[in-house]
Length: 422
Image (cartoon, rainbow, N blue to C red; front, side):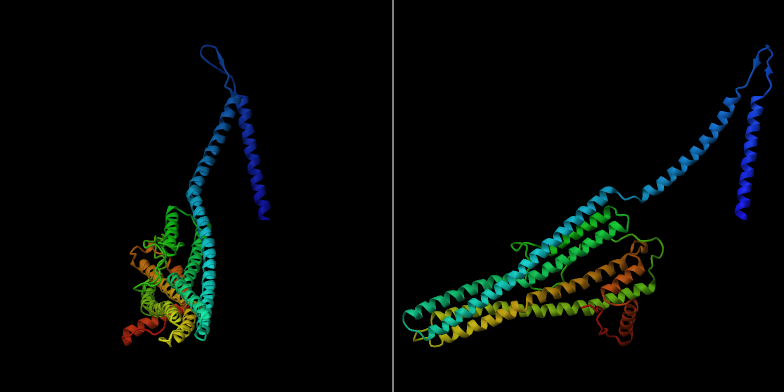
């Protein structure tokens, strides 16, 4: 009913406007002639007057429309990303995808190195030990042939062990696994930036810094730039740029509060006292065990080679025993070191410590930023920290509360670890 009434009102207004316009036109056309003092008659151009009025109305509406369109375009242009920035991010993403494949393929190749070298060296060592035992019961020509063959095989196994213990293939494999995972993570971050935001030049610079930092942390070549496999001090792995740029947030509270800041400070304290420290301690143990095994393997094969060389002589009755026993022990040590992948375990502990160090620096960089608007959004940042530690939001708050209570009331650190993932 209301729609019928409104349509009737609109129709009546249109009809009255049409009648008024026709009346004005008729009056303009039938205007009387005016005479001037000189006797000349002047007739007004009625049709030109009507056309001028209509043109004025059309021009006014066109000007209004163009003003609205310009205002809309000025709003939309500010939200459109720079095509060059998008092209650069796509180029970086392609390079990152290529690095993922490179590290994956090289990791598989070095895993084959580890298994093939382990099998070959053990086979050579056990064959040399067998020949040394047979040589102890032989005389004459066969004795010399067996002694020479066994000694040469032991020397070859010693040289191969020195090279294998130097490069630590199992540790190289773990490095390539970590690099492939981190490059894949960076690729996902770039895709998220392209799909859910307005990328700018700072995003391009940040992505470039992360790529170069990963290239430095996990190099592909072995000669010249290979990571030290037996460092003097155990430090967490660092694969992120030292000066990371934070995303600009809102200009209000940005989701941060005094309680959230205190919670993040307690989490940082737990990470430093428990998680990072514990993985560095385990890394030192793994490094010490790996050093002992790396020295023992070539030493035992060298002793076996010397024992085999003197086997069969009257003045060295224990030479054959040394040649056989040392060779067998060398196979056991080699299996323990490379079969159990002690180097990989050390690299895993070092990477885990680096993961917690990155979390510490990320939280501290946000807390040290006085301008709350330049921090990451508080609620989102808290959820990220909880997910990285394998906890719920309530579990993260409970951990911070327990740490605060334990340090303030009891005067001692909490025994619980921050991470529940590893």
